[in-house]
Amino acid sequence: MALSTLDPRTALIVIDMQHGIVSLPCAHPMDTVIGHVAELVQAFRQKHCPVVLVNVTGGAPGRNEQPPRSGSMPDDWAELIPQLDQQASDHTVSKRTWGAFMHTDLHDYLQQQGVTQVVIAGVATSIGVESTARQAYELGYNVSLVTDAMTDLNRDAHENSVARVFPRLGEGGSTRDMIDLLGRTHG
Image (cartoon, rainbow, N blue to C red; front, side, top):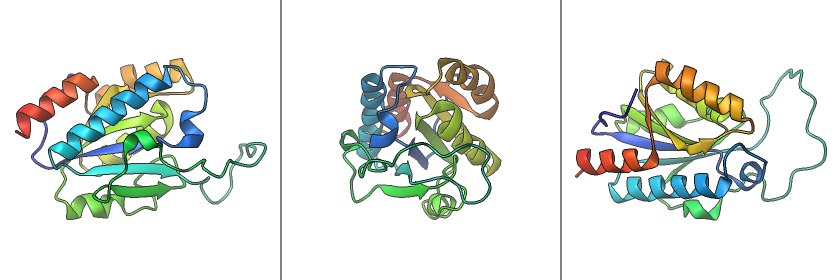
């Protein structure tokens, strides 16, 4: 479903745009995705809409049937990329699960801000982005997904999320579509 409206209190949630993730081989050119995400962040800040920057700092506790990644993580693995130009007004969430709402303060923060709609972008489409979108939908938020401001480690996984999952969770569109809509609805 194409982007149609934004609620008066809409927040941008940026998923896992951090050194260790953006350096992985992905389905789309990472420089393009980073550029789109940076445009969204700047546009939301200009309209005084909440910006949430999410990073992943490790795996979920408990049993996990996947073998651990070999080698140690670089020191800057979980650091947000500089293109986000992190500001004091941004809310930062560090997670250990795929979705940004589980075991974090994200829902409480959004409720305190009066947010009823979330716009989601980042990496990876079928993991952190989709999990966060599902959780947001289940919590009652209106969900919008900016599909050219995200990518995945696997093109088929990205396309499955965009074509089959996201239309059931909310509206989707391009960075340009979202910035134009933001300008029209948040004058």
